[in-house]
Length: 211
Image (cartoon, rainbow, N blue to C red):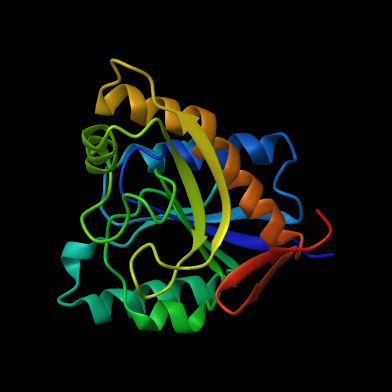
């Protein structure tokens, strides 16, 4: 059986990309393999991670395109040419439009550093998520892998994992714990489920076959 080809879209250091690479090295991505890394700006460390693991990596710099539409078209054209089956947003902080969603329906995954529907939507990214969680005084936070749809953080939920919020946490310590205990575990697992054809989407909900 041909492996499903995965594109990982990045904008920064690529810690979630590294988690996927590590899972691949342990043969934990099922019938999937990381075939392409696309960075939205040059010089980010995620590109080095790809290079160090002999994964094809390219830069599609957002600043070189005059609109979201033209940038989205370039992304689609690139991924179609590479015969991509699954798109993973791993710290990809660039807005894309319906061209991408229409080309890859229910085939785009994102990991969000909170338990959706809490602390999600427009403006909730990076440390802002953890600042909001701490300001609210929640005792549990975590991470969510969801299918990406045009509405921000509103797509069907694939997996979630809870993480304890500890007294004295800062946004930085909470971010680190959620990455290590949740994001780096459930993102590779969601990719495996997709690549092994275990994910069914019905009525905006995800059902997992035979797990």
